[in-house]
Structures are given as structure tokens and as C-alpha cells.
Length: 430
Image 1 (spheres, helix red, strand yellow):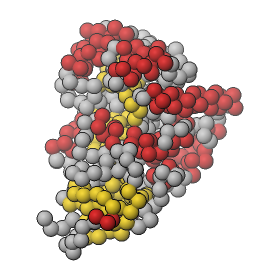
Image 2 (image 1 turned 180 degrees about the horizontal axis):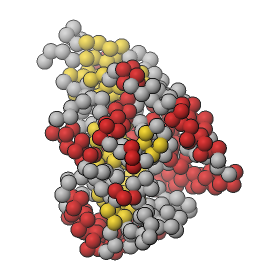
Image 3 (image 1 turned 90 degrees about the vertical axis):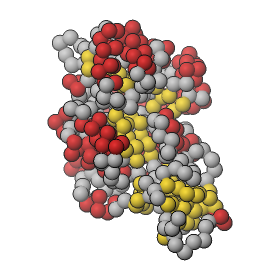
Image 4 (image 1 turned 60 degrees about the horizontal axis):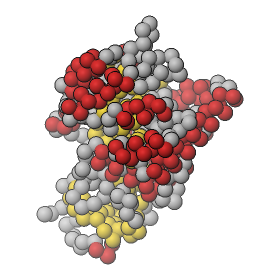
């Protein structure tokens, strides 16, 4: 076969947990990795285009299995922002930052997400600038009489409300007819202001999802709710347990039942961390300073005692992450992007940083952000840099194993073998 591109001289982090190749090559042909290895084994073929990556590091692109697409615009999360145009804009922002797969969990409207997902799947929307979209379509939550439900605060009216096992099964059947990638449900009282799904209701919901060959992911915060949904057969939780964190019983349940847990740390970390991160030049490549003003004002308005509680609560999450890891729980990166201050594309890199700062080894965190979520999503053609997989490359100026924040100092992004024109992309936002 003629043609192809040979990337040479890079440090290669394969994403599968193996030790990096310090001076390696990647041969890309027809959108796939034909071979990967040390430079001593690089092919010699004059028909190949050559790209010198000496001094740079290559890792797989990021796979985020938890966010909400289409709602964030100009720094504001609102239902009025949701549109096909905004969803596509978010998919471009994701690719710009080297996030090649994004699963939106339960806040679709008018089947816009599902339509785009289907168009990508059947090839009618084939654009390397767009991250691959997966969708849970419409999620489920309990109704709160006289008020909105405890689902997504920015889209409660887009969520199906169920009060009984029969209603839950009927709702799951209706969602399953759209062939979503997963079923999402909320079990959250929102600090005692909302009704929660009762255990018998979410048990029926989970069972019906499984009858349709679909996984069920639970939004939970509280320890008892985590135990309840895991006991009922949930496949994963969209958040780690907040105060007091996981106990040994929950950890044992998660391991025994092979339930995955999404990190979702950055959304809690951003406020007590203070506004300094909003000045990160890599964020400002896609988000104008004026679009961060609302977040800055919110931070400035937090009373000191509330800020202290936020810090204490975040420390619980950090300890919890270490507990999950020590117990052998399957932990996956989850940025909960597209909500509030979780700027789409950039938030995934902040999440990686949060995981490592909390004590997760950088090599393990990268695997939890690439190969492991890809495998969980059934995307076995990507997630690691090995022969036969898609050439989805995140090429970095520096080594993230030395400084995890290097994942957002991007030299270039290659999606399916096609290098993105990030300069042209950036010009559409700034």
C-alpha cells in the first residue's frame, strides 16, 4: 500500500498502562495505526510523509463518558441555548482540545443529539472536526409535586418523570425505542428539596434497561443511594459519593458487581480553587474573557464559611478517589462538561489534573481517560495507540507524566489520521 504518514521521535504514551516508548514512531495509513514502536524499528519507505515529533509526547485522544452537550453558551448554561448548531459547536470544541468521544447523559431535546449521533454512525455526518457523540437521549427522574424534578437543574422539563415501577418500565421502553447508548436516571433530593426515585422504581427501571440490552447509569451523591442503585443492578454511577465518602461495604459491592464509577471531580473543585484557572491561556483559546465573568462573579460572592465547606467537601472527594482506587473499583474520567463552569473540551483536562492531584498516578489517570472509557462504551477501535486502532492522536509539547497539566498544552490533534487545523478552528471562537 502506498502513502501514509510516519510520525517520528516522540515519547509515546500508549494509553493501556504500559510504560512509554521514549523515542518512538507511529505509522498512520488510511486513518489507522499500522504500526507503533521504537525508532529502531521504524520503517524506511520514501513514499511515506514524515512528521518530526522530537521533544513531543503523543497520547491517545480523551474519551469522556459523562457530560451534557448543547446547553453552555457565552458562559451561561440554559435550555434556551440548546440547538443543533450549539451541539455541533461543542463537538468541535471537544475535538479542538483532543477529546474525540463524548457521551451526553440524559438531557437531549427534540432528538437533536440522537439525530446527530445517527448521522455520524451512518456516515452522513463525516467530519473529523466533530467529536464522536454518544447519547442517553432522555433521562428519568421522580416528579416533585408543585416543583421541578431533581434531574438536571438546567433541563428538568426535558427529563421523563416516573413514580411507579410500571411507569419506569414504560418510560425506559419509550427511550429504548430511540436506540440510545445508555439509560440515565437521577436519584437526588437536591439537599432535601426534591423527591427521589424510590428503590422499587429504579430497580424496575434498571431491569427494563437490561431487558433492552442497555446499561443504566445512576446520578447519585449520597452513600445510601449509591448502595441502593448498585444493589439494584446499576452498571455505573455518574458521581463519586460525597460526604462522608464511600465505605467498605459500598467498595466491596462495586468490585463484586463490576460497577464503574465516574470521577466528576472538577465541577466541585473549580469554585473553591479560586478564579486563577480562568486565566489559563489554553482556556482562553476558545472562551473569551467576558464569557468567564459570570463564574468570576459567582466565586466572588461565595461567603467565606461556604467556601470552607466547599473545600472540606472537595477533600472528601479526593479521599474517596483514593479509596475507590485502593479497593480496585473501575474508575473512569468524567468531566460533567457543559454545565456551569465546566467549559466544554477544556474541562476534561481539568478533570485529569484533579485526578492526579488527588493521588492517582498520571499513567493510570491517562488510561482512565482513554482506553478504559472507550472499552466501557464498546468502542474497541480506539482508546490506545496500538496497531490496528484508529489514529486518534493528542500530540503535546511536554510530557504529562511529569506535569499532568501538559495535556492541555497541545501541539496538534489528529483524528482518524486527519490533522485538525486548530488555528482555523480557534478563529471561529476568539
